[in-house]
Length: 279
Image (cartoon, rainbow, N blue to C red; front, side, top):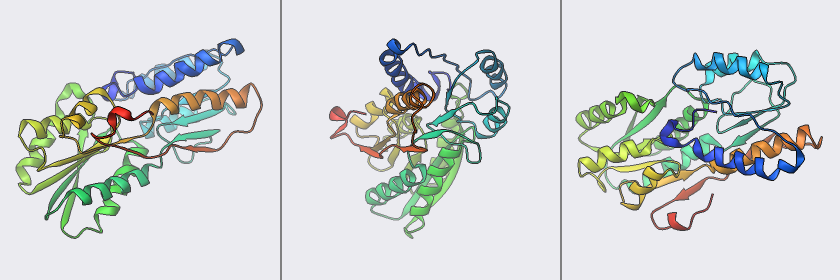
């Protein structure tokens, strides 16, 4: 999985689920090795591949959030190694099971929520964070599919480097506000929602420019409580990490059949229910 601090520390959440599963399976002599890669540096996957081959694994839980490099990586691993995908998905790659949201439908839902918020004609910016990722692209497709039903709203895709150290996202937001004085909404396709919210708050545009995004990391929740973010979509990352380990345990150790796909519910979190929400 990506380094825990990446994507605004989103990856600490599934890591908690992995730790919870590990604690529950300790008496079964299940050992878990953790391999972290830099999702913004393809070369870091080369080192991961060497470590995977050296570890003599019985199963692999993997978040393939950089689609093309992971396609090559997984095809180079030993044939028959049980692989469970979580958070994202790679079509065409043999796998035991996949765990995550229906990304397309979560995008459609976000589009519907945005339509409910916008009461006058205007522009909606769709932020696609890089690197390229299958489930991020699916969210964007779903959002735009719904937006096409709304003739009073125009939309455009804006790509931003997810590497927070570069400041690239701020330049993208500046360009969007400069080019679209009629901006009514921003849809952020991953946990970096707070970066859009910070820009909206700095311009005192909260309530005029609506923000919808993903994941209950601390910074996103803060802007949700302050009313800058209107909705957050939760994909239950802690449960994904937990279910991934349990799925491998059931297959490898217990020799039980496991579902080919485990779909997480699409939860809408607002300022009114965030204090009561449990993943």
